[in-house]
Image 1 (cartoon, rainbow, N blue to C red):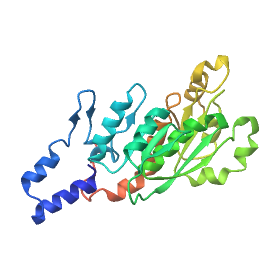
Image 2 (image 1 turned 30 degrees about the vertical axis):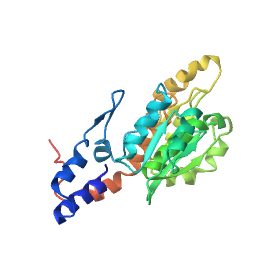
Image 3 (image 1 turned 180 degrees about the horizontal axis):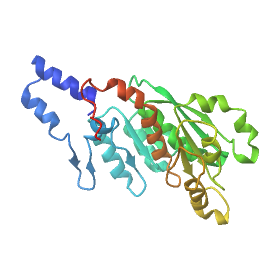
Image 4 (image 1 turned 45 degrees about the vertical axis):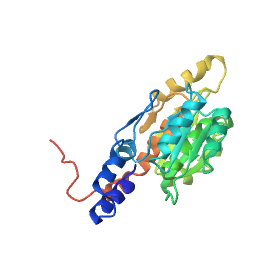
Length: 264
């Protein structure tokens, strides 16, 4: 249940269209619901603006489907990550609204009449980094951010990036996914004033150590304003970029007189 749904329910109670016992029944499982193998956080959309996301890796097909069905009873959107083809087929059978983003390994159900705002730019060093970048893009998109992509502009041909600087400056937040040496986020961070979210990918040869080399490079970035996600964590990058992108909207929607006081 999100804020709009809760507000609508409270209005119906106020107007007498819904009886108090019926409203209590609807709210009974609002904090969480125990399925035995999973405790679903139905309160998350109210706290964070988006429902609980299903991390499918390590779960059975039946578990993922049961979680998805339960979440959809209280939410009009769904995001499942690390989705294998067998799980994707089951989710697509479950809902005609579901879409499988194969490159990203994501299944998404976009809420009706979703209004996308702001601008998140997703950049990759190479084509091999696109799956991680696509996980980030789909995540930010379904949460309500306008997204754009700039793929395969790594330091092996830096002129490809420098020729697109206007697009870098137009974004509110920038995600940069890179494997190999992982240098690209530092380059982007030195060109812009926007927050840069660096995502190391597990693409590279032996001494790359499955993304560890890129991770350490990014953690040691000399460019200011660069934050670093875990290896291959496109979802985390997309979620963080969306929250940064929406900060101005959040400030404008906060009720007057409810801002947290500044403590000295």
